[in-house]
Length: 264
Image 1: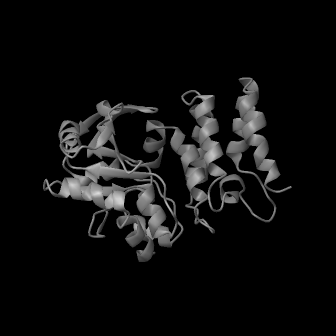
Image 2: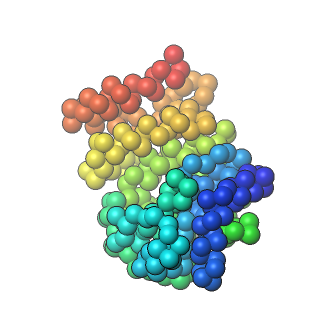
């Protein structure tokens, strides 16, 4: 793992300022998710998310006291966006998701970092980094990063049914590894639920998630089962059929057609 990139992340002036604001109040906050994952992989990160054992109303009071601008449009989900040195930080109170259906969920706040980690999709996205460089890792996320292993947290079928977008997020995150280590049984389950996912996910949301795949370091892993014979993954045909059926030209012409250009 890349300790140098962790140091660079923690030494950004805006990040140091954010830790300073909350640590002075004896509150615990940690960087979480993609920024920690990318730093461990030695990659630059743009989006920095924060997990905090502080409820949203208290987060707002601390920000206001320190003259920090913020946005509270996701307040009902426990999230406040702080703006420091033109950088946006989404600060989310530790929470549990309950009665989740698709992209919508009810929440309850918690003081348990592990319970907060349990609601996240993959082990490599459930990593928390504090200002001293200490990582909270409840599900072997660091080990899985070293192994190029992408693993769901908890029961895979249950997690997919909670949010069907996780099918496509799975294939997006395969693209962060040069040689992804696939887990036996995953493909069959993902394929089984793929068609059902179209009942719950909008075409535009699907298109946005697919377009993100093109920006991965090893995007071919998201689209092809084998780099030699270029056999496309099952989700591409199923999604194409769905876009045709629903007359979604934008998805066909400005999204799926880009896949063929990767190998031509």
